[in-house]
Amino acid sequence: MPNLISRIIEPWYPATAVGLEKGSASVVHLEKGRGSTCTVRRAATVELSESIIRPSFDERNIENPSQLVGILNELATSAGLLRQKRWSLSLPEATTKTLVLTMETQPQSGSELQEVLTWKMERGFGAPLAELSISKERLEKDSQGRDRYLAIATRREVIAEYEGLLDSLGWRTGLILPRHIGESRWLVRNGSSGDALLLSGSQNGFTAVIIRDKHPLIVRTVNCQEPECEDELYRLLLFYRDRRSTDEDGRTGLARLMVVGKGLAHARAQEIVNETTGEHLRPLNANDLGLTLPGRELDFDAIAAPAGLATLSF
Image (cartoon, rainbow, N blue to C red):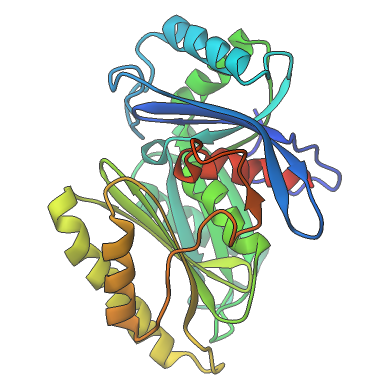
């Protein structure tokens, strides 16, 4: 099974990706442009019955795999991508859990490091580690010099469902990553001074990712009903604002904002972010992020995650 995050020296990453979410599926093929720009050459999206994919970390996700295989076959055919065999896959947000782990003290040995990480992951993921497919990546130290790690987990039986789905289509899987990782690629590729905030909404709430120096600083998934999203976003931003005030490296605060998905109205999210942080930001669109869409009929929100994974091919 491909790791969620790979550190192989010479990895292969396809420029073609599929994105799955409750109520929708999308396929996309990118072509590199000048500098950090790229163009959507082929893409298609389709609405799904909400019963086809039931994203869950703990339970079965796909009730009728053969039905979904048929839908994806038709989707790839409509986009002219049926002959593509190498794909990355953007998983529904609810199928994975992501943690940013901070080491409060410096471990004295590699075995002690593994013990501490294991303890933190067992608490954070809330499941026996033997049942999970986990990938870890070391991040840059925080402002206090402490080591940090990004850990992403999916239950083995859940990820096997999605792997089996692609195998049935004859597709070879390059990367399998949660939705917010694909979407945050756009902020990583277009780095600048200051922090960047991704707000990825869904029917179950939202995931917020704050990027600093091209690495995640905060990753927080909030499960809530739509009327509660605004209050939860306020709480998250207040936490970030308080944390920023304790930084010792003179950070300038939020410089970029990206809002995608359902559950969070772009204009309202912009208002809350600016009101809480004192910034004057607007949500970035596809052009701002260096992506050229083939026409207005293609919704950037629908392809942001798989297209973000496809940029890893460049």
